[in-house]
Length: 234
Ligand code: CA
Image 1 (cartoon, rainbow, N blue to C red):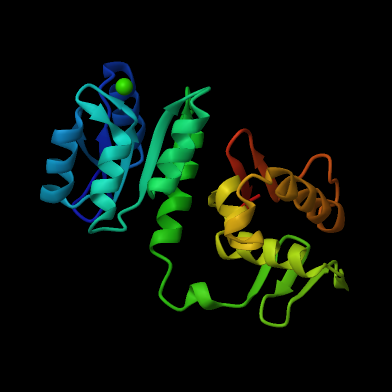
Image 2: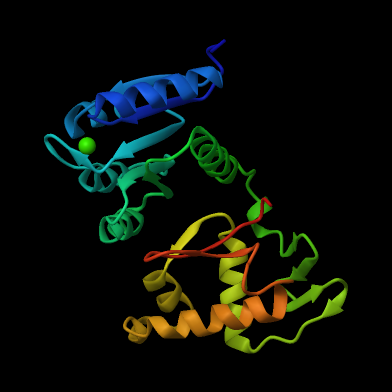
């Protein structure tokens, strides 16, 4: 049963069937929930009930969910997961750029929903300092960001400077989707915005050097049309 210390999830969604599905799925897992169905009600809900996490539909009757993200990011880092339809790649990218933490593509399963909520909450509640840990482990891959070393099965793997920069950025943001645009800006610099193929080529190199089966990557995951995600939970 939900109790007052359970995380409060704000559901901002206008479609009754999805509201119902979310409500039933989350209550079964003992989350507390609060609901709104417009941008205006959603903002009021967030300021008044201080949710732990927000599930946000992008197409709301009185406006775009992205406006709500921009407003909330003016004062809060509250985790926001966007609910978006298949084919709406650009609006997912816009939502991530506006500060959303992640997205789910409708229709999604209860399993996907809960996994996404858990990994977002895990990141947002990571104790201060833990982010600065410079060592990491992903199955048989481990490394040290400070020493700029990476190993597979204890064997050191040589990466180029840019390959390592890309790896380090993914490790620092593990389990989070990073857009092509963001990766380009952070690794190659602001002048490279139109060079999306750089990311594709370097990601292929990382897979070749670090994954057991580069054609079926376990860690370096493509988010079709959006970007990439380093998956730490396998
Ligand atoms: Ca809608």
